[in-house]
Image 1 (cartoon, rainbow, N blue to C red):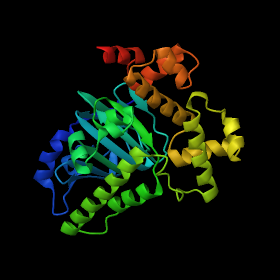
Image 2 (image 1 turned 135 degrees about the vertical axis):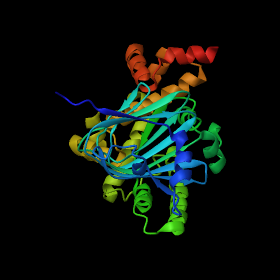
Image 3 (image 1 turned 45 degrees about the vertical axis):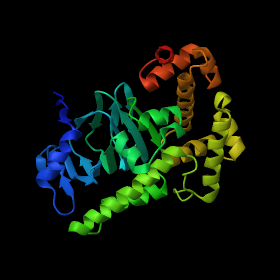
Length: 332
């Protein structure tokens, strides 16, 4: 008989109470000490750090020995997950992000009654850093003007929607996350070190969100030639979003085989080129929907879909509601 997967409920709003009750001079609190995770399910480390009383930071180096689901109840909050190794299937509302064991940054917004669930499967590992912060605190910290961001990114940074976007882990991000995990200091100095590194990491993440293409690091396990080729791919996609060349045509333009292109792009960006093109198209579509100047069919054609039906299905799968609903809401 197949054993049922254990389910754990967790509310980050309770973290403050946990930290005050059990943190030491380092500012770290171990969730393992609460028995939140069954010892038979998880081995390793999951520490929580309070960053300047405006954000909570999770430092994770876990091995999953028994499958379980962890559900977080989040509201008016932004979460940033930086995965260096491993991962888990993630569900945010109606949107699923399947684990592909690729390094990635997952930027998510949690609006009203937002629920985020992770299915941790036996045999998986999870190494990285997660940050929870409110839109108000993020804006105050970086003096952000959300009007300067694109439609979807602006909505996410203000937690106006329940949604996620995926970004590449550059070598710069990887180094700072590893520094946080491998902190060489103890006690109060450890606290100061983590605080400084979290500030550095948030600065880099904001830059990644503003200009993901510009933050691509040439030292991201690629030769200079392959780094240049990947930047060329991004440029081709951005300039031809409504009529992106076929993969074999892109391969020919950058001097790579299709197989090499697919492998290199996924290594660099944590997703397939096809998924990247789809995400870029739907982000552009959301901006056009918000402008309210075009019909659904016009928007579909503008971002590269051949018909309204396929566009509508992709839009609903990505955002959780159809584009027509967005236009109607805009009109009212």
